[in-house]
Figure 1 (cartoon, rainbow, N blue to C red):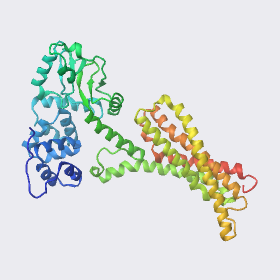
Figure 2 (figure 1 turned 180 degrees about the vertical axis):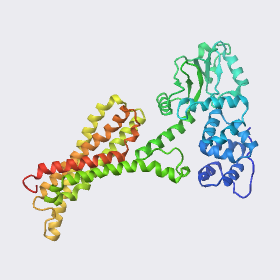
Figure 3 (figure 1 turned 90 degrees about the horizontal axis):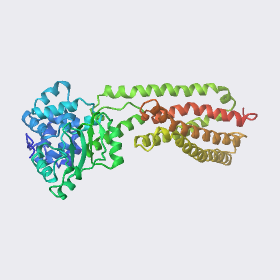
Figure 4 (figure 1 turned 90 degrees about the vertical axis):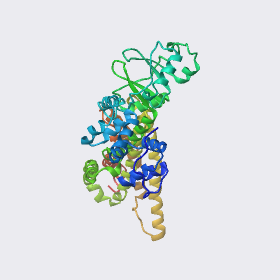
Length: 452
């Protein structure tokens, strides 16, 4: 039975766990403590399990010492390690001192690992069994050890005297087998394991590929260190998706919730990319200046610059987003680059043709409407050639944008950078500069001898 929350108060109306969880970010420390104190013990245990480690750490800090100790001893070691890592340096040792010796050793062993690898995610408490046990002996042993086994008991892990993993047996097989059946006859030896140093994103891919609910973690010598469970991976997927979205949006990934990040830290995370993108966009002005003579001869061309470069930027951002997400899900690998190029060339030509046709119709329709309403020419006597220039330029920019957007993630992955860094703003900036070159190169070819 979990410890009962302390400091109940009538100042705060009792909220259901879901309501309290939703309101949690907006509450003060005192209101959080009061709301938590009004939960039943069962509700409180579920509520703490749902809290992000940073919020759980803040809650532990404001709880009275006795209640904090009870909660820390109740929580699984991996959850306690997450809470300790979220605390300030000066608070960590005091928190660890509240644990019993065995739990403290388990948590310290987890703190050796980085937060984003399998060893940092795993729970060191799991159901250990010996190969020479029978099904009946294994069930009796697990009943006696229930306080020290994993929080999610679906499998027993058969290890030898050196803690090397030999096999896995499900509890369904244990309870349905004859009591005298040896575990070696029941256990599965074709195992899916992850090394303790594997990145958490790669672990999540293995979970998805094999449709697992938990997976054993082993060290370089094959010794079992713990298990990673599906609820841990849910948090990983959310964290990785958030990080990728922030990078795709053109900023460094935040290492804390938005409202917990200081204003200066938030500005610093955004300023670097914005400055780089600003410098990149300044190259667009340089490119336009290079074609100053063409613009002076045919001012009408300047009207369509935003239309041309935005079409390429938008198509490039789409392609980059699709490929980055496919890479994150393991759907696309480095060796698939040629297949992606072929698909994006076909997509770029098709999409560019559609948008180019719209651009051509737009020029012709606006010219016709302007003549019908005002009796004067809008784009000049060579308006058809202007429309053709716009159409061909849009086709070229969209094709180039899709190629650039789809290949940049491959290039970054090959250079061992995060593909998410091929953010939509970065791709758009690159295509803006080259789009100006494509536009005026096409204009020079199509309009030579007429406007140019």
